[in-house]
Length: 229
Image (cartoon, rainbow, N blue to C red; front, side, top):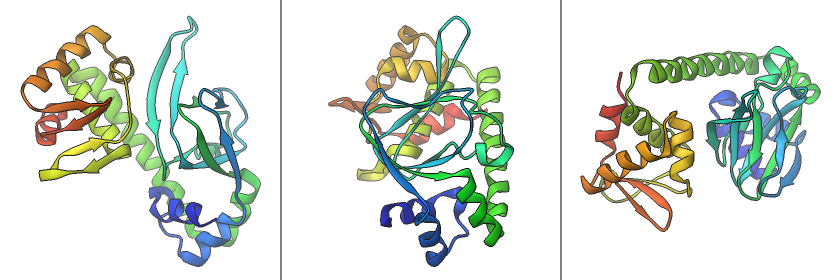
């Protein structure tokens, strides 16, 4: 599975794999497809393995007891999802749903550990997962605690650019994914009306632009400054 090899090579969590090892792990993967709106797994489901996104996009969210949804992340191609279940053996901590038709490669927990036991350097990569997850959680907690809403919106746009960004003229970053103001507000933890005012102000100032539903970070350095604690 050539595409899955590329995902593995570019993934922060399995970066130590050489070409032969990546091919061996890819041979253990099963391909599946999801229609838009289909739930891959829900919080509380057994953690039976991890998935690599080959095409499409997924949203990661949690739902409160009153039914309100908090969007945690949007994932695109070359992302891994569900790998935390390989670390602690616990149930899924969030719900993952396809935002558009999505193609995935699945590796079961049994197959992954059989491979990792034969290639123990993968366990070092798993420690990198833990470190990255903790850092991201700390950053998110600090942002919610200390950053005003403009900083949280800037952080959200920069995170989306990390996942879907394409560098265009003069260092501009095009977020090659259509995302609504409501979704940005959900990720940033603010009311849509307030986020809309922030985005409109940035459009007038030439910091961001939007064309055909795609946001472009015209001056990403301004957003990086706003997102700093």
